Length: 391
Figure 1 (tube, rainbow, N blue to C red):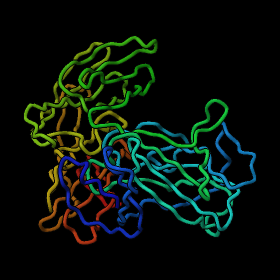
Figure 2: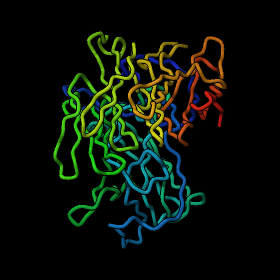
Figure 3: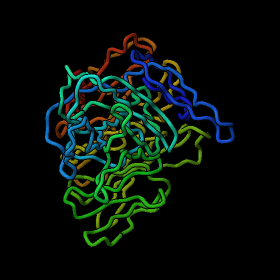
Figure 4: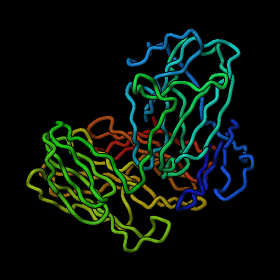
């Protein structure tokens, strides 16, 4: 898998089972003379292709009879029919989905990735016509980083794809022609996207990293909380309350999240009443942020800085149970659940953001340090009876 150790604030050493070769391009320093860009071979199953026949996306229908890729978009789910231009910090995987037509045997496909304007990843391979056919939609090309809770590095990503070295019109359709690239951004930890309330009557946002506001349907802003850093927030289903994390960085160690500590708050709308419901000795939400259950009775998150060393990772799942009046929160720690596997000298931790499957069941991928072949996977946590079942 593609590793980004140089970009991470803390080292995490986990077992990898990589098999495919890609080229990682490293540009020369700005002051260096004009020399060829260095290449380094690493092992990484970065991209595979699968296709289903679907009509091209509305907005651009090529009239050419030549092989062509077009109508690309990025999504966190390969089944998504809509794209997104920004993904939250700690995103583990981003799919790039596009339409193809007029393909035939013998053509060569190349994908060039750039990160913040610099060459980042190159993949080149022949088109397997026998397997994928002439027309369809590619849904299984992705970049990913599963080996650390920090996920893919933040920054602006750009994808350019070629058929027989001809750059393809994969981008959005503007000024009567498509762009020849696809762009999206993975936001830094200190940036979180705005989010609409479930009833679409409010839009919540964090300004300057520490000020939580909402805007009504007319765009009029109301300040709800002004404190220290606010890295995560989530709406309750009643559209009247927001759950959010406030981070204290006064004890933080340089270059890491160690020493930072978080408080969990609930704020009401429009009365602006705030309630401190949980105080942590470390950070919350490093893996997965905050996720409120469909009925608003529970929330799922992670607790721990994300620090890892050899067979140790300090991050665990944590759930919160709320009373009807949302005046408090009862923490439920990962260790309280039965059914979680264990191994000597190993730590079991959440590998990525999970998703609520029902009002009380949360599906999340677990990984374990220093476990041969890492035989873990998706587990369904039921907070109503404190059980975890492998799916």
